[in-house]
Length: 110
Image 1 (cartoon, rainbow, N blue to C red):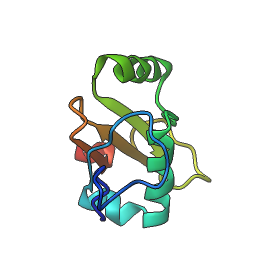
Image 2: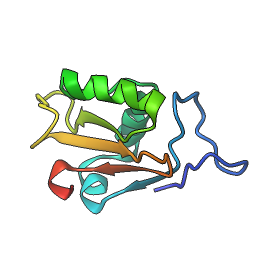
Image 3: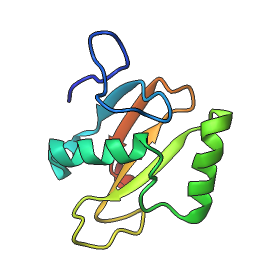
Image 4: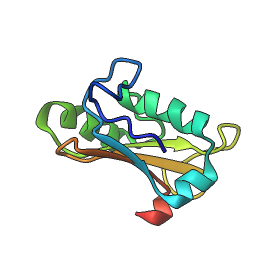
């Protein structure tokens, strides 16, 4: 996966609500999703669309924008199938509290 760290050489081509740091992915996420889907999910995450997280996690993410906590988003791997925010058909994106790294992963890889 391409390193999309916010530097002069590598820039994410859209505005973000918070720093993403280095973008990395686990083997499971890379196997489950094509790069275009990962990019669409990252776009949503970076814009503050938390996907299929529960209302409590969405509120925690909103607070994390101000207070610097970890941010978690959840999206369906296959958008035509249901996604509960965990378990099967779910892709997580986690941005660490220090904003140094954003990781694509499957819940089973956490």
